[in-house]
Length: 300
Image 1 (tube, rainbow, N blue to C red):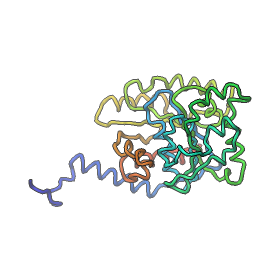
Image 2 (image 1 turned 90 degrees about the vertical axis):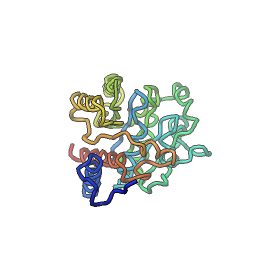
Image 3 (image 1 turned 180 degrees about the horizontal axis):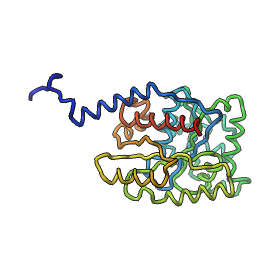
Image 4 (image 1 turned 30 degrees about the vertical axis):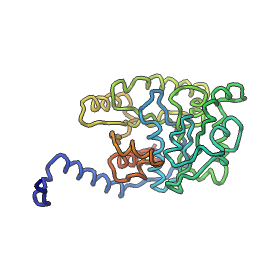
């Protein structure tokens, strides 16, 4: 087979154009200003439709912000515990977890672990105990405010006050755990998959946010929408992007997360894609989204 020399390489091919564009994006990230928020920003990452990249978004945005120097805490409120796994946290030992915080009243600080990925990245893990928490919470006093009170108490401490961001990864259902997340948060980040029925359930989620504002948390707002699993080869994906931006022009980020093998592989190594392959297209896209979130927060 004939080898392709540097001289014969066609720089106008789609692959060459894509690589050149990726190089430009990496350079722009290196130059970008990533401002720190004036106070801790608390996000709930939610979507009642499963398989939209909710947990992947939570951990990779958190990891990207931590890589830029921010101090970031991820609270894994999903009984599956996938966020804990992606951040390299051992959730199988005898450890304090988010279950102990919301059900037993354990101080949040006791359950926080440092991710081996980055000393600025922290996690409150989910263990199997969390699977029964919905039932146990029903009989507890102030059941909707358990996480909020624990988080506010921690943020009021010298250690907790240095947090720049908190991301709460929710279960894909509107139960008491998700309600606790909505009450504790000030901002909602919704990942939306660039596929058919993408907006299905989002209107219901927006209705849930409005209900929370009316009855439990007047400070809650939908601040951010991130388009995920984008396949540039399909007309459908482009149509979904246009539809979402038409419906939510102020909230939708310019950054779009592509379908990526690297993004899918990273959790199996106990890593986010930002650590697994920082220069891959998926990682670059999450870094761009993180920068945009940071800049929007200061600008608002």
